[in-house]
Image (cartoon, rainbow, N blue to C red):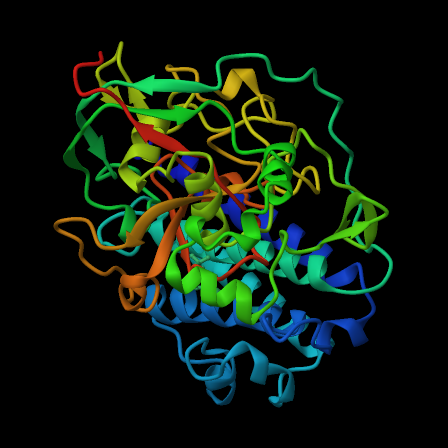
Length: 439
Ligand code: AVJ
Ligand code: FE
C-alpha cells in the first residue's frame, strides 16, 4: 500500500469493502431465505446472524466510532454482540429476518461509503491509512469464510459452484526444506491494515529446522489411519486422546469409508478423497498426532513465519513468501475462487525463497504454538478481537485457506482456534529440528 496517496488508499478501501459485500451477497442469496434462518449446525450461527452482525460491526466502527454518528438501531446491538450469545443459541433470538438484515447492512454500507468519501485517511490511529475501513473489510471477509463453513456443514444439494483446479502433475521436489538458524523479524509495525495481534515487529532467534515443502496430503494422512493412528494412544496428546475416544473420531471431519474406499462430503457432493490434496478438516490434536506418528512435530508459529517470510538474499522479512507484491491467482489459492485446496505442490510462483510451497492459501496450517501476544502488544481498537483469546486454550493457525480473501491474508496474519475444532478449513505441515551445526 502506498500509504501517502490518499486517493489510492480510498480506492483500495472501496474495492475491499465492495468485494467483501459481493461475496456476502453471494453466500446469502444462493439458498432460500428459510435456509438463512435455519440452524445448519450448533457449531455455527444461522447465516442471517452473520449478515446483520457484519452490518452491525460496520455501523459501530465506521459510523459511530469514526464518524461520531448516533446508533441507528441501539436495540439490536446486544443480539449481534458475539460475546452475549453463544452460536448454538442464536437461532432462537429475535433476529432481524433476512429482508430486514439485508436492508440494514445495505443502509449502513451506503452511509459508510459517504464517511469514506469525507474522511481524511490520516491523523487518528483509527483512520490512519484507512485502517478502520480495512479492518471492517477484513471482518466481513472473515465472516464470509465462517458462512462458507456453514455452507459446508449444511445438508442438501450444493448451492455453490466454482471452477475446479486444472489437474496438476504430482509434486516431485524435495519433501522438506532446511531453514537456516539465526535472527528473524516476526510480525509487522508497517503493514497499514495489519491487525493488533500481528504487531509489533520484533526479532526472534530461530534455531535451524526442516519444514515440509508442501502441506500433508490426504494420501499421507490415509497411511496414518491405515497404520492404526487413531487407535494408538502413543501418538496423542492426553486431552486429544480423551477427545477422540469420547467423540468416536476416527478420520477427518466429513470423511466416511465405503467399500474399502474413503469418501468425503464437500459442499453437498460426495467424492473419493483426492490423495494429492492437502488434508482438510482436521483438529490440532489430529495434526499433532499425525506429526508424532511420522517422527516429526508441528512447526512453531515463529518457524512457520520464518519459512514464509525469510528472504536470505535480501536479509529481511517479506510480506508474502513470493515477495512484497499483493497476491494474484498465480501465487495462491485464495478468495473462494475454487471450493477446495489445490493439489500439493501447486503454485510454484508462490513459493518462498527457500522453496516452501502453498504457505498462503489452500488450507489453514496448525502450528504447535499457543495464541499469545507479541512483546509490546497493545489491544487496538478493541480487546475482544484478540486480547480476550490470548492464552493456552487457543492454538495458532497460519497461512489462510482457499476460503480466505487476500485482504485478510498475509505472512504476518494470525488465526487461532480451540484444538478440538475441525469444521474450519484446517490442515497442517510438519517440521523437525535440524542439526544445530547445519547451515
Ligand atoms: C480470527 C477467525 C478467530 O471468527 O472468531 C470475526 C474473526 N473476530 N469477528 C472469529 C472474527 C470477530 C475470528 N477469528
Ligand atoms: Fe465478528
